[in-house]
Every structure is written in C-alpha cells, then in structure tokens.
Length: 262
Figure 1 (cartoon, one colour):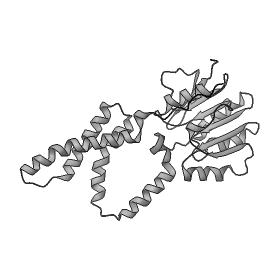
Figure 2 (cartoon, helix red, strand yellow; figure 1 turned 135 degrees about the vertical axis):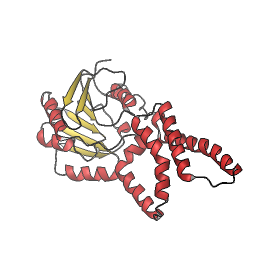
Figure 3 (tube, rainbow, N blue to C red; figure 1 turned 30 degrees about the vertical axis):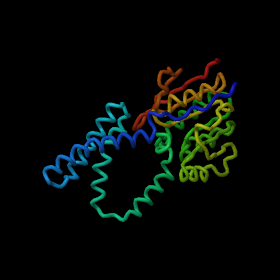
Figure 4 (tube, rainbow, N blue to C red; figure 1 turned 120 degrees about the vertical axis):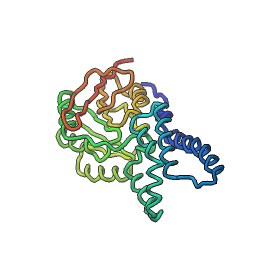
C-alpha cells in the first residue's frame, strides 16, 4: 500500500485554541471592567470578575462547539485560579504538580486524549473477539498502563501484541507490567507515528477529538480485511460494521470497523 502523509491531530481541538479562547474571554471582560471601575475610583472586584470571565469563556466554548468537558473547564478555570491564589501556596508546589501531571497525562495536553483505563469486562469482550479470528498482531494506540494488552497477551499466547504510549510515568508502569511477556512489545511513541500496516487488529480508547484524523490514518495504512476497534468513541461519519455493548458502570461500546479494499 502506498505511503501517505501522516494525519495531524485536529487543529480545531489544539491546546493553543483553548488558550486563545480563555485569553479572549479575559480581555473582553477586563476591557469593560477596568474602565468602569476606574471611572468610579473603585477597586476591581476580582472574585466577581473571575466569575464573569468564566461565564464568558463557557459561552465562547459553547458557541465554538467545544465538547462538554471543555465547556466546564473553560467556565471553571479563572474562578478556580482566583480561589487558589487566595490560599498563599508556595509556587514551587504548583510547578511540581504540573510536571507530575504532565508525566501521567501528557496525551491530554498534546492530543486531547485523557488517560482511560480499559475495564475487565471490555478486556473479556476483546479476548472473545480476537479468539474468533485467526491469530495475528494486535496494536493498542495510547496503551496507558497496559490495562488492555497485558491481560490479552497472557490469555492469547498465539497472538502478537504491542502497546504504544508517550506519557512517561504511564509508559514506565506499562513497561514494568509487560516484563516477561514474550508476545508483548511495549513501545514508547506517538500514536500518529505508529505504522499500522503490520497489524491485523488496531485498538484505541482515546476521545472524540482525534477520531476523524485517526480514521484517515487507519484507512491509509491498514490492510483490507483487518479490523479497527474504538472503545466508546465512534468514528464521525463512518458506520461501524458492528457495535458490541459492554455492560457495567459506566457501560461501554466497542465500535468495530472492518477495513475494506480500496
């Protein structure tokens, strides 16, 4: 199959866009509040102002059709920042917390992909799906702690498994969990640079944000007759060949897409 350029993560969901939205809300509110209170010779009421900035940011996020969790984050960001600023916490703790979170949730910052863990019921459903197919190679994109590929590799020794992860601490945890598992390759890497051509099944549990671009990559690289499985998040404007319902709290769905020729 001809090699096509790798798709980039969706620009519309980039961190820069989210920062721009917050900045726009702050500039809009402060450009009105400062002159108003300046003319009245009164101090700016920062708590009330932070609430208004949060409200405007939430409104802008809604108007730009951001996912619901981004709307909540935009609305809460500045008010929570003001509350924390009143606690007089040493700035060093914030820097430490930032680096620790980045080590675990790097994908949430760079690719709009939080850390989701596949539950046991979903792993069992995946194991049944794989058992019904001839043994092949399985790739988990954004493998997290290895909650999918580690138990699958143990239960299906005839299959070859690989997990790709780019958050340092989660990669390390998955690497330790995969030690001694001969049919599992644990890899450091970006899902956008993973070559999908050699895999019979590719699995992803990501978020709605990258699904359209990932589907372009899947169709460009995966061979006809192979299978792409997405946990919980359907590919936009693409009908799955099958949907597997996973009971539980919360319930999950596996969206199965057989790759057709051409």
